[in-house]
Image (cartoon, rainbow, N blue to C red; front, side, top):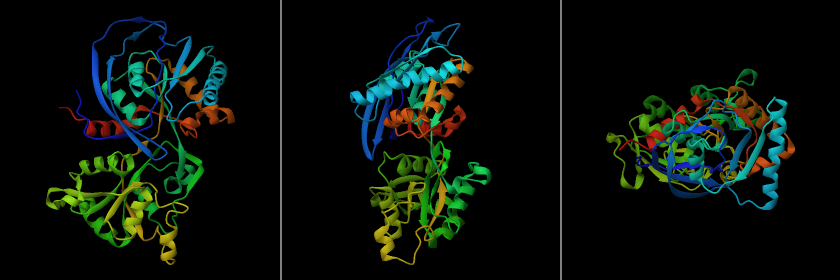
Length: 390
């Protein structure tokens, strides 16, 4: 039994139950309670979900199904028009799979709950599922070997993340150096996609040298602006970063004990508002998504009052958390390598069409990249941090 100590920012997806031909055996049931925080268009809701599931029970000599089962649980309400768009993906995916040599059907339907995601996947009754990064961390931690990631959704890369030849930079020290370089402006490159983003620690330029000399221990006793405790980049991942450095958040109003490694936090609604609080000397540092300094209008009033200053020059990036991965498309681990590759290619091709892209905007996905289980080691570390053993 896990005791949930933190809240995880998730987009919710789930699946229907359709069994493929297989020989099955019965496994012991396990009840798991997980706290799910769903953020859609800036609105966050929290749900406690208890799932009673079986360990993976599907065994077969031929694990590739005659019909590929995919199900969605939408983050927005579904009307008949949107349902028709989703159902149109069936034919598109079938055509792509047929081109790859797999003459199989595709069945897409709408589910109702996050609990059904976990139950359907670990019982082997759904073949392909849209899981958030933390849902994937949960499944692969609690039911290892049942599910494997296929794809991740993507976003435009920040120019600070892009190296020569449009290679994505993974060394966070290099990204930090680029983000602090003269001329950096927080812009992105729509031609280069990434499957994750970061939370950044931002300080005023005059404090950067002191932080550099002391390292992250400089935060002890300070007042740090954060988002709510349900925010991934504004609180949850920063909490893990502090824990990895023997520091911990406490409400600043309580008076953090620097000697005990306590870092005060003040909740500030909105990432750009947190940056403004830093600019106005209301806090010593802030954790926000990388890069919250780039915004068309949020800083207009500050800029008008400080026409000679550049927001990217008067603030400095000190640290980045582990990558926060985007939504996944995950599949049963026992699908054949050939079918796995065909499914990956099919979804990449479909979202590249106008009709497919439009249908997948229920999740605001812009494209997909092939993903690997090792990409989610950081997500599993976060899951373990939030869900320690009793």
